[in-house]
Image 1 (tube, helix red, strand yellow):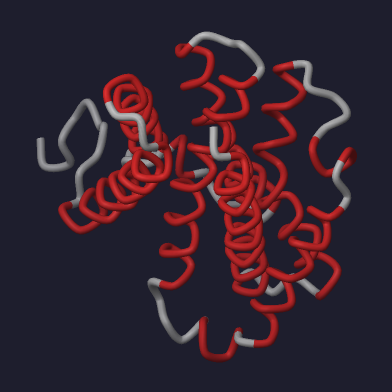
Image 2: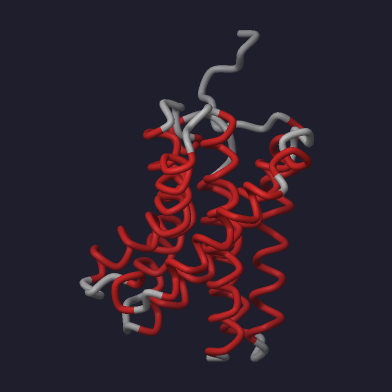
Amino acid sequence: MNITFVLYLDIIGTIVFAISGTLTAINNRFDLFGSLVIAFVTALGGGMIRDLLLGATPVLWVSQPQYLTYVVIGYLLALLFQSHILKLRRTMFLFDTIGIGLFTIIGLEKTISLGFPASIALTMGVISAVFGGVLRDLITNIVPLIFRKEIYATACLTGGICYILLEKIYDNQAFNIIITIILIIFIRILAVKKKWSLAFIPKNS
């Protein structure tokens, strides 16, 4: 496993999700401290739940406090450029989509490294990717995407399956990671553009 490459992905994912959380808080008129709390929850909440379920304690941000710095970096970037970012309606969606792609891989890799089977790794990949957003949305009084009809967690699950299969047939982890992240982002963007959903009953029926 290319630990350095995965570490960089983890850092980037943390910063990206912190930006996403801060933008959501700003959009909901949270104050500066409240926005920082939302940034923390969004960036580290999914990983914290994953670590607790896996028994990997202390959780990541406690054992490696530098992750708090990464959250602050994302928070400050969002604050500094909020006037430009909030004008772009799709920016928060883009940051969130990149984040779930990155964190799906991080959750998979950590779970596999701890010796758990692929089925558990897939579950933890999805949890890592979406539960920070779930906590963010619950705190900001929004129905979380995972509980709506949109293709969200399904994109992470599909990407996770793709990654596990690629790892079995192609010995180039960096390539496999990049392809998986692109696939997750592609599915998510295409699902929103085409209005795909997992609804049992069509709207017009």
